[in-house]
Length: 448
Image (tube, rainbow, N blue to C red; front, top):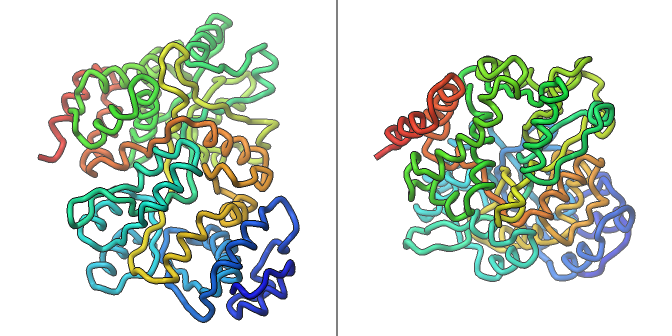
C-alpha cells in the first residue's frame, strides 16, 4: 500500500485491505514510535493482495506479540501474513524444506540449523546490501553479519539470515536495597567485580548464588559462564575457533576460561552452600538467596529470563536489578555481550518475502514489539523509549553498548558436545576434576 500515508490506523487498514483497525494496537502517529519509518516503507511498498507464509518459534503470548507487529507490516505493504508454529519447529522446517513445501519466511533461534539448510541450498541469500545495512545499523554490526553468514550449496559464504529479537545473557542480578545497606557499588570492570567478591567475604557475607541443576540438562548454566569468560579473556576470533573446533576444546584458551569460572564457583567462601552445592542446586532455586534476610548471597549471574523464578511479587528495579557482567579493564577486548536470539531467512524467494526482510530494517518493526515484552534489539535507530519497562530498556542499552556480540557457544557446537559432554563436564569440574581433565574429556567426545 503506497498510495498515501494516512495518520490513522483505521484509514490505513481500510486501504490495505489486509489489516483491520483493531489489528493495529498502537494508533499510527502516536507514542514513542518512529512513524516516519513506517511512512517511508508504506510509500515505497505496494504489494496489495499478496500473501506470504511465515513459520517461526513463537507460540502463546509470543505469537500474539509477533502478530501485533505483523499487522503493521500488512497495513504498510499490503502483504497478508499467514503465521504458523509447531512444538517441534526445528524438525518441521527441515521436513518442509526437504519436501519442497517451505514457507516464504522462516525464523529460528538455531544458527547451526540455518547454516545446514543454507549448505543444502534451501535458503536464498539476502544480498550484499543487507549485509552492509547490518554492518552500519546494528551496534557491533560485524558480529551480526558473522552470525547470519554461512556457506551456501556452492560453498561460498553469503549472508543468509537476519537477526531479529535478541536475548542477553551477560547479566548479574542483585538486590539494590541489600547492596545499599552494605555500602556496595555496582562494579564497572571484572577487576572491580572480583574485588567486590572479596570484600563481601571479608565483611562476613557470601557473594554468589550459583546453581547448575536442571534435570537432564544439569550443567548448562555453567556453559554460559565459560562462554562469557571466553569473551573476556580471548578475542572474538578465538571464541569462533573454539565453537567451530578450529582449535581443540582442550586448548589453553578454553582451559583458562573454565578456570575463570572456577575462580568463582569452586571457592567455598564465594558460593552459598559452598562449592559442593553448585551442581546440586537447581538453577531455578539459586536466585532466591538474593531475597532472604539476611541474604544468602549478593549476586547471581544469569540471562534475562531469570526473573520468572524470582519470588512472587518481586518488583524489578526496586527489589531486584541487574548489571552488565563486566569486562576486564586490563584486557583490550572491548565490551563483549553473550546472548541468543532468532534469525529470519527466506526459504521461498519472492516479492513478499523480500519485502518482509526490508520491513525488518525499519525502526517501527522493532519498536512495536519493544513496546510489548521480551524483545531486545541492537538496532541503533530504534527509539529506546519504546521499551515497555525500565528493565528492558536497560538490557537494550547493554546491547547497544556492546562492541562484540556472540551467540551462545554451546548451542552452536555439535549436540553431543554442546548439549552433552559440555554440560556433564561442568558438573565434573565443580565436583573436583581439573579444568584440563574436563576439557580433555570433552575434546575426546567431539564428533570426528
